[in-house]
Image 1 (tube, rainbow, N blue to C red):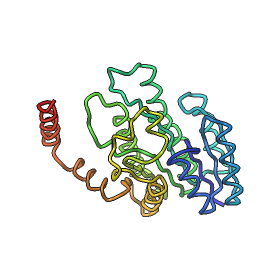
Image 2 (image 1 turned 180 degrees about the vertical axis):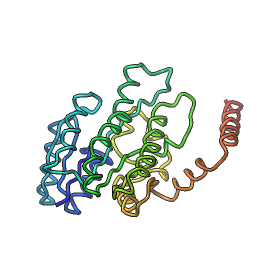
Image 3 (image 1 turned 30 degrees about the horizontal axis):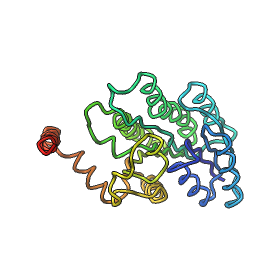
Length: 260
């Protein structure tokens, strides 16, 4: 029986990963801060799919929380076959409007935890010559915005995942950066983002994001951008000269200011 460990595994994309993997017959280790919610979701998955689900309460913004999950990932007696680094937060504020404490908390979860857990999982996977890691990034990581904080953290996740994938592919280990666009989860409400201002046609379902991500992982891809609408946008962002992108953004900003 294969085993997957999913962080942020009780809501949104993390819960969708847990449901999809349980359907495939994976046993699960689910990591989250809310122990009660974690236990209830674990019981639901066990009852519905007949798999083993182990709740692991940990706050990945803290060194102790990361260390607890690292220890589980390094356990040779019950190796983890698939790691999903899904937990993440957004501040919805620019750099100068954010406290250093909030910035460090976001960096700890979005960057440091991804780095530490990936590093903890890799030695065993390399030794076994098999294993998969999905790091949930974002389309936002392809954007450069004035004073950006969340997009900057996700740009790191995508680059880190690609470079790690290149380093470990010869050992039979696959690493994927999953970069969804707007996805209907609790994420935006928690970050204080008004989802009502986002056009309906831009929204994706968490289940569809996970389906596309697992498909691309198993095809050996390094980056997955679910849905053709976002694929087109990302292609334009990645291959358009930076100077031209800055000019277009400046033109849009000047037009908006002229109408104000």
